[in-house]
Length: 321
Image (cartoon, rainbow, N blue to C red; front, side, top):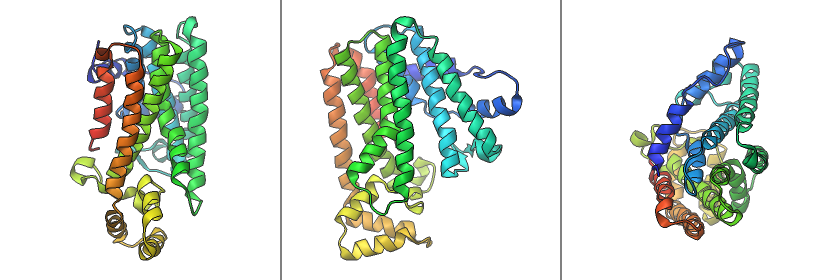
């Protein structure tokens, strides 16, 4: 068995190949440019972890991991366009470096390439894996649409936000694990517990991400905190503050959300602190983490095989960037 870090190294080495032909260079060079920016590549490694939880690593798991990473990058290229983001992982986004039309096609061809990798999986597992992959791809798009819808709404409930985050972020983490498990020969019950483990880890991961954006150490986090606050994003933290703030705090928060003052982040963070948002977020994260581990415990394999997944969960929850 391999650790999470060892599998990460294996995947990164295997992924360092040209994923597109040379011509037309105006389409494929921007695609390779974006893939080479890198990233943590957690989702493809989850495919390998899901396989290894039940069996020795199968070559199909790497084909699946390639497909998942290509799909994820397709979604990022298009998300950057919708968000009008100029930087991704410290580098210029595709639509910024090239143009919108190129970025649109780059995302499209990444999705097509993902399906080409998927087709290489042995027929015995392809139908089941493809069904889950397609359902997940649709849900990710639904989550992105809800995210855009919520940005235009005056009020969003915590339940609505969790539903959106589940679709936009968690389901791909969960499906990556389950698809790997299918290749590893796992039964239906074990697959569902693994999916729920991944889904709950994904929600906890987003809570951690929202927390770091607000309270992270700039020297460690790699950027000044408060990016979500400047963009008036409806995060876990803001939604809770809005639900528990007193009349005066609520008035100030609503005023700040429509302002662009130099001290906006500082003032919002102070209200967050006064409302006990950090402690609440930590407790909520712990709640979803506990749910995840309950499902992991229910998976019928020897405990030693679960260790890489525990290592992964601890990495995601204790990260500072």
